Image (cartoon, rainbow, N blue to C red; front, side, top):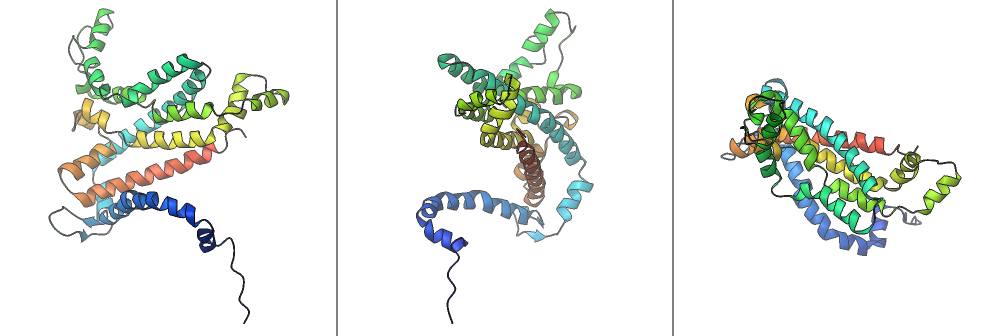
Length: 304
């Protein structure tokens, strides 16, 4: 019987043909699988169990998810706060990153480097929360209270992070300030690689102003950076925790600063109910992946 020739596009054939490349990727893939993929799979498994780290996991099916979605009022509050923070800080921060990067890229040399540092510095500053805690100090010596009292907007000091109605707006402002980071830097790098001849060709084809250049030339040319920035912004906006823990505390006033991640840290890091914490993490993971897919689909339409 005549043997059929091997398919050159099969997975095995590609591995054999590009074996050196796959060999070079093997260390990264191994580490990625061990420290990213495997922990996610283990977390999903634990989400269907009762596991308190003192005894073996006990399979309880959908019990954790039922409790999480139907009985846990604090999770619903944390979910609402997280969605508000994500809907406001995610898109606004993303748009600001693109606009600031586009504007700063118009400068040259030292000026551009200095402005890039100014906008990127808050995201890497270890004293960012300390600065905001001084600004928001709840007495007349706090910077914000002092300014508002000096100009007559308020008559007495406000306990900003101990007053429920102010907690979430303050967290939104601080998170916006902190989020001009990695995505912004990626956009700056991407803008410097755009082929300048594209603008000349676009001018011949009828592109007549900077906004048309931005939409039809610049943004499509940096689509990979836009995708990367979107992933970073989605991750940051859904994973807000440090700013809430440091400024509002845990628990915050009437849980006004609670987020899904602070709720996760409560059950996973304090109560050690790892099965329930894994269920929270799984729900958050599904939300992130779903939002990421929707945003990427939207970004593919840029320039159409």
